Image (tube, rainbow, N blue to C red; front, side, top):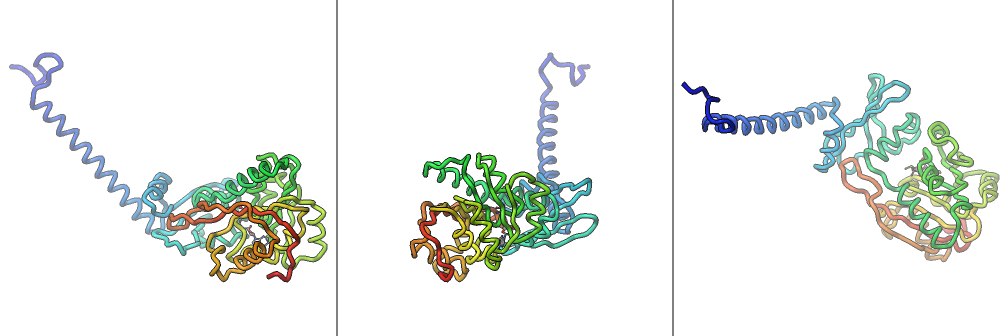
Length: 322
Ligand SMILES: C[S@@+](CC[C@H](N)C(=O)[O-])C[C@H]1O[C@@H](n2cnc3c(N)ncnc32)[C@H](O)[C@@H]1O
């Protein structure tokens, strides 16, 4: 009596072939079901406040859902960042989990963010895909070349320097001297901790109220470029501080800034909006370039549009302009 495998070599009996085809289909269906189940389970767990996997995070972005989690370690102590499930564009906070504690941190609470090594970079640069530093530095390099100026001898003041990302990119592009300035001592501390040697000097000051000696010190720096990246409007560097920095530059210096397009709207009530229009209309700032780009994603995964503005300071700006 022939066994099931007793037919000619390589030819399966019809029942066997049907069996294996059915098995394959069942396998695929089962795998899909498991994948769907895992997806739901993992998201369900995330909604309950626990962790989800990095791969899920990527998939969530693909689905235009917010990212959920990143993990890192500082000196052997792990930390985790969670973004809220179903976040809206107005959400600006994330949860930092470390040492068993959960802290809600606003994206603009720079002092707290800078205190954790790598936290700003992982949340703002990696997770929310911030491009402002790269776009600004690329723009500065192109504008400098177009004006026939040499990068290697360029002196740049980086206003609102934060942890030093712009300074680091400028140095990588060949700029020999960059000085950082921020109103937070925590920004300088973080920069010295994570990017020592990037800046020739890093000043901590709020130029709007700074003593004349600080402004004099800036003027001695002989800066030909002022970079102000992601640090204008919305309660960041006030126009008075921007104008004082501009006036401390040398000659027909360049201003390179990235600004939310909302602050450029003529109807905007943000003080930056008025100051910018007054400077350009008054002939103190000649606009060389204005281009839109995606600054970063918001918490819901939607793009935030900024403008790269490159201008030339044509005359000292009167401080009573604003
Ligand atoms: C979004 S961060 C951008 C940091 C950096 N430019 C970058 O692109 O990575 C904004 C920075 O502006 C700084 N800032 C806010 N107000 C300021 C002021 N009045 N003077 C100087 N810096 C200020 C904040 O402390 C913060 O470090």
